[in-house]
Length: 305
Image (cartoon, rainbow, N blue to C red; front, side, top):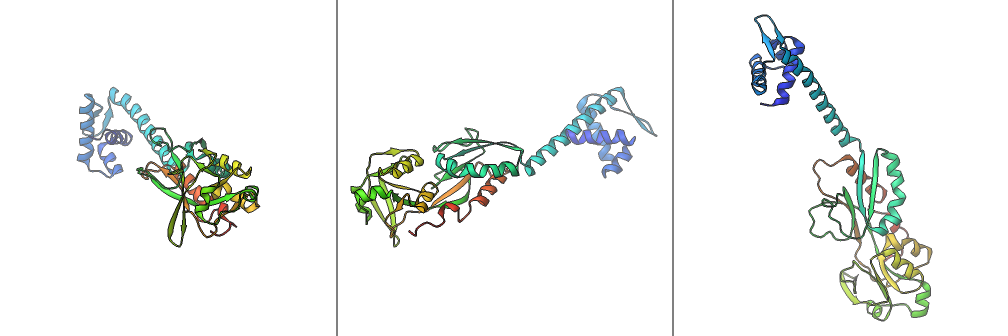
C-alpha cells in the first residue's frame, strides 16, 4: 500500500462525503477507492469511516486522523515546492574550491556580478592549489586548471589560458636573452611546485616537443610569488597568462622564445554529479563560462607564440 496515496484518498472521501464522489473527483474506480480505504484501516488497525447505504461519516478516530492527514499532505506539498524552487531558483550556500592565483586575480572581480544576479546564494570560497576531494570535504564544485587526472567528476571547460615564458627586462639586460630552450639551462629559472616534473620545461615547435632541464633559486607553490620574483628581476618564469598577461601587455615582463610555445591550459569547473544538478551549481558554472569563455580577456593582445 502507498500510504500517502491512501491518505489523499481518505481526505478526498471525507471532503466529498462519499466513496463514489471521491472516486469521480480522483478519476478512480469505486472498488479502487474502497480498497484503499480498507487497506488504510487495516494498516492503522482502526476504523476511520462509518458506512451506511446512504452516506458515510467519520468515526472519532477518523476525525482526528483526518486533521493529521491534512497537515502531513500540506507539509509534503510545501516540501515538494521548496525542492522544485531550489532546482530553478538558486539559493543556499555554495561551497567552492579555487586555485589561489586564479581566485585572487580573476574570480574576485566577477563574484559581485553573480551575487547581484543571484542574491539568495551565499558564496563560501576556499583557496587552495591542492586537489581537494569534493565529496569528502563538502564542496559543491571546484575550479581545476590543466589535465584532470583519474577523477569521477563532471568537468566543464570554462576557459583556456596560454602558458608564457617571460622575464623582466632588467633580468634580460643583465643575463642575456635565451634563443633556444637549451639556453635556459644556464639561466635562473623559477619553478612552480605543482608542475610535473618540476625541473623540466616542455616546449612545442612544428609539432615536436623540446624538453629542457631548468634550475634556479626559487621553488614555490604559488604563481603570484613567482610573478613578483620575476618582476623584481630574479629569473625566468613559465606561468599562465591569467597570472602574467597584464605584465606582458604593460611591458613589465618580456615573453621569450617566440618560435616555441607551451601547451595551452584548460580551466574547468568540476562537480560530483550531473544528475539532479542544483540550481546554485548550474548557474555558477554557466556564469563562469559566460564571463571567461573561449577567448578570455587575459589572453587578449599578447604576443604570438
